[in-house]
Image (cartoon, rainbow, N blue to C red; front, side, top):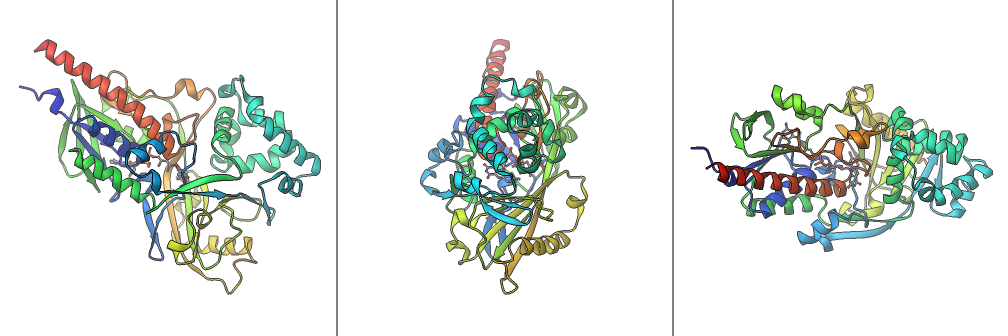
Length: 445
Ligand SMILES: Cc1cc2nc3c(=O)[nH]c(=O)nc-3n(C[C@H](O)[C@H](O)[C@H](O)COP(=O)(O)OP(=O)(O)OC[C@H]3O[C@@H](n4cnc5c(N)ncnc54)[C@H](O)[C@@H]3O)c2cc1C
């Protein structure tokens, strides 16, 4: 006799925020869940690290007041009050010079652009949301749209390096809708939030809720194989354990899932061609603050990195013992020379570059207490024209395998917020599918 549907678990692959949210929602609905994470910690790209004895995120993370999916989840978990909100500002490092970039006066003083271009930049930026309304931005190249509204100089000198940092040379080809959406999430002067107890507080609370709801959480145990069956799938773990799942929710990048899938599942996976940018990111613990801007793009300054995030401008320095926490980053392919370079070499070169960029702050006497390098191979899926139409659906064909991955976030910006929203949608489909399967089983009994 086969196992009844209601006792067959859902296996969630990946313990980042998508997998944690999916597993949490399923346990809340009294559905048995196994959450499987290959790393030795949960949290995915928001995973914790350590520098100078202080707990940090490996990659800079913040919460936005517009996080319409994440904030209600935090509320549900009793963590709404754990977010500390702070007004943050933006700087701009261009040609080795540093500018504040927060007000009309700052823009007027922004000499890397000629006055006429500054005025055009300011006027168009104010109108940009309206200029994009009703346009087919999904099928318009970012370069074409921005060149047409800002002119070629502002595009080349400012916008391409500013917004293109995440996508490299592919940025001009990305649909303009991505940028249009991003402008809805970010502004120069912005209130940002950071959880007390770091992002681990959120991860730990989700884990506790899953386990106390009867879910099983496995860490440091990767999924090795997913094999389709007639009414579900078998998930084999690296330990050799096999789980007969009613359904599977995969949150790992689609190319990774393809490498885990058996032939019939691989054939069903969305055939969308999608490249991913990875990231190389350095974290510095300094005995000096920099300029106090949360975010400062770096353009044409003889650095390998394209941006500086002064995290302690958001979190305060108390938990850092008065020290400053700074992230710098370069998004690049996982097959690039930088990605392959040793952490020591990157740390050495980027420390020198950061000192050269802030010579008045990081004087010879200033101490760079520690530098940590973290890399991630799959960070930003690079959408191409018309991607919205081709974006993978939640369900893989007629199988019981579901996807909740960053490749399905577009046109939203990849973030914890958008992953929570996606996981919520996918879990609703999983539950509908499970109910239908249950009804069919009863009818056939
Ligand atoms: C530099 C940087 C800055 C960012 N800044 C912000 C920010 O300020 N605010 C914000 O909200 N978001 C930010 N993000 C984006 C955010 O981190 C991601 O969008 C989000 O974490 C994606 O979550 P996920 O669960 O979909 O994927 P991931 O976090 O990638 O999780 C996937 C998980 O699957 C696991 N896995 C892989 N293979 C297997 C296997 N075979 N078996 C089991 N498990 C497996 C991985 O180890 C990983 O834990 C940032 C990201 C980066 C890199």
